[in-house]
Each structure stands twice: as C-alpha cells, then as structure tokens.
Image (tube, rainbow, N blue to C red):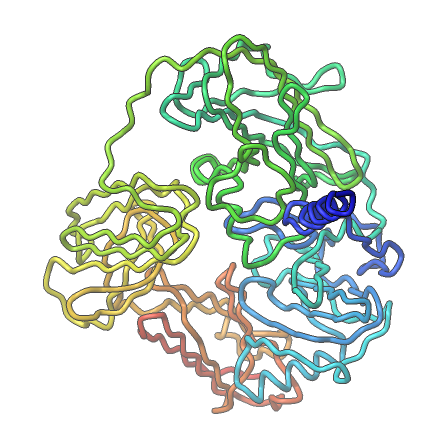
Length: 575
C-alpha cells in the first residue's frame, strides 16, 4: 500500500508540472550578462513588451533615439538570419541568430552597415523591388558582439524616430520580454492606476443596481490607490473586473505596459497573469484581453481581469472561475488589485463592496441569431451572406443585423452586428449589388467607418455577388473604384539643374481601394524608389553608381491602385 500511495503522489505531481498553468508559471533562467546594449547611449523607452496595441501585443521595446542616424550594435556574436524591408510594419529590419538560442530583432532602421547595404541594394535591383523578405544561412553574414550593424531610423509604421528591439526564442520564434535580460534601464517608478471597471457578467448580475459596465475613477493618497470619493459599491451575482493601468519608467514620458497583474478577493487569489512571452499566432487575443469596445470608442486600453471562454492566451498563470466572482449577500468583500513592473515596483488598489442577492433578470435586447464562439456559423439575409469559421469569437454573440438604403454605393449599407465587438478570425462576406453597373472588375467591399471614411476590404465579383474576407464587424457596402491614384511631385522639376539635390520625391495617394504598386524608370531603366506608406512618400535617392551625372534624364513613374487604375507621370530633369 505504501508503494501504491507513493506512486499516486508521484503521478499527481507529474500532472501538476505538465499542466499549462504550471508550465507558464515556472521561471525561465534568462541570461542577464550575455547581451550588450544595442545602442551606445543610456536607454530610455517609449514603449515596452506586451504593451496593449490595436489588435496585437507589442513584441519588443521601443528605444528612444530622438533623431534618426544613431548607431545600432549587435548585442552578441551571431549571424544575420533575416532581412526584411517593407513600406509598413518594421520598415527596414534585421534579425540576428545567436548561439545561445535567442534571436535579436532591430526594426524601423534607416539603413544597414556597408556590407549589408551593398547586398540589399544589389538584391533590390536584381529583383526590381523595394520590398523583400530573405532568410540567410549561418555563414553568409556573421557578426561580432558590438559590431555596428545598422543606423536607426523612422521607417515602416513608426510614429517617430526610435529603435524597435526584440529578443525571440530562435526555435519557437516567440517574442520574449527584453527587460528580463539584464539591460541597464532605470526604473524606480511604479505603474499608475487610472480607472476601475466593473462588469455584470449575466442577466442576473448588477453593479449598484445596473446591468451594464460601470466605471469608477481612481485617486492616489497615503501611498496607495483608492476609488475616488470612496463610493458605496453593491455587487450582485457574477462580476468581472477591469483596470486601466500603465507603467512608467524613469526619465521618460512614455506610457508603457505592466508586467504582472493579480486580483484577490478577501485575500484569495482570483486572477494572476504575467507578460513574459507570447506567440505571434495568439497576439490577436489581445482583443479579448482588453476591453475592445472601450478601445474603439474612447481609445482606452483596459486590462480585463477575467477570461472569456474562447480566449486562449498563454500568458495567464491562474484564474479562479475564469476570474469571475459570485458575490453573495451577507459578506463584506475586500478586493485588491496589484499591478507590477519588471523591477517589482507595485501599484495597489483596494476597494470594499457589499453584496445583495439577485432579484430578477434584467431585460436583454433583441437579436437576430445566436452565434457560437466555438462552432461554424452561417447567416443569410436578402442580399447578404456571412460564413464564420470555428473559433471566430471569444464568447457567444447575440448577433444583430440591419440594412439601410444609400445612393452613394452599389448596394445597401449592411450593418453587421457592432463595430465594438471583436472578431478573432477572418470570415467570408458576400454582398449582392442592388443596381446596374459597368466594369465588374472595379468593384470591392468597403467598411464604412465614418460617412466620409471607408476602408477597402477587397473583393471579387462572382456569380452576381461581390465576395471577400474580413475580421471586423461594422457597416459594409459595395464600392466601385474607377478613379486612378494621385501623383504629386514634391520636387520642383522646373529647376534647370537638380544636381544640388540628393533625391526626387512624390506624394502618392489613392482614396478608395489604396495603392497596390509603383514602378519608376530613368532613361528606360528601373530605379529604386522607396515608399514610406505612413506619409504617402515615394522617393528615389540619386545613385552615382547607377545614374550617369551631368546630363539630362527621362523620368517615368507609374502608380497603380488595387483595382488596376493607373496614373503615369513623365518629365525630364538635369542631374
């Protein structure tokens, strides 16, 4: 019997250590002295790891450079494993694999060192493309710790000059929290809590007699956070919580993300999650982790302290009953919210609440169809067909639909549920035109965000319907685009001589379907035009190796939108 008991205990112990929650809770031994800084100045941050962003967690840290042109260094020996250049995203980016199993990533660069720059430009000219994404084997571009690999910039989707820096697990490609690797970044500043949000979770639950989310402003005094005005709070039934909280580091104004969150009710742990690591495949679950509706309506990014049924984030260590607490009459409740940064600086909010038993169910609004968060769903109505694959939603959706006529478009405006409800995966949308038209290849589906603002969802005309895929709810209609892009020179080509200039540049825009591609030639030969999508800026830097100086040149530029409409610009210039 003794051996049987010992074996049972051993088996249960193995199960515990193999469970997802216990695995995520185990502490990795991140090397603290292996990597040097990627820059040669004191690091201050404008953004940090797992900070809440639109549709994704931030996968690294943003190092403030203030201007472009700062030297960027390899943080350890290794080799360049990837170079990616794009008009958006990370812009010009370089990836270095290190022998200890980690990969460092450097984004929004202005350029690379001489060796890499020469390769990049040669590749771009050989393929006649500005954008590319290439992987390399170990021996191609070896680097040493402290070697200059690049120059900082503001390329891609960067909102200002900075260095986006990541550390990833090479094998899994999961981004890891760089602040756990011992970089010298001063942080004695604790997080700051701004608002508490309390959520009734079903029709029998309430907060101060109301069945809707309630906001409670927070204030700070006596070295702790408190609810402003010390309001009386009465909770009934199943309740969830959310916190508006940011972290701040020393010597910077940047709003950053917290590292760890815990919630306790009467000293019993309700919620515990930590931002150490995640997978890019799960990053969109941020739309369930934060209050998506508040982000859309008010640009407030709230950490929920409860978990929806179909939220599969791996960063959660522990939830009791998915972080939802059942408040029962006869008990006074003490509720603590604890937000930490990586230096263990703590912001703590304590609130007290009373409870009452639910009386009767609150009336729920009407809806067209209940959509399952785990199964496939199909919705059909007149000139609209929708097909949602499995796991499209985080919770079951009480789906609403309506339509209205609008002569601006080639279909009615179809209001597909609410723009403030997130969708996790792409679903199929098909809309039937309600009037005659020409040029079916110029049709696309647009989401109408405002009366004068639309976004191209794409689409193809198939058997009388325009079909596409999208991963948002909102207002949709069919749009026809026969208008070519606009091409406006920023360079004054009326000047007789451009030899004092280092580049020629244009503003290119397309208000409907968007820019698809562009092509520039000088004297009949393809030349490297670079595109800064966020500023609609297209430019060519004069290159003496490929362009003969002191003569007249013929420039031809062709810009095409996503529906095939083209604009051509031609001129002559002396350089």
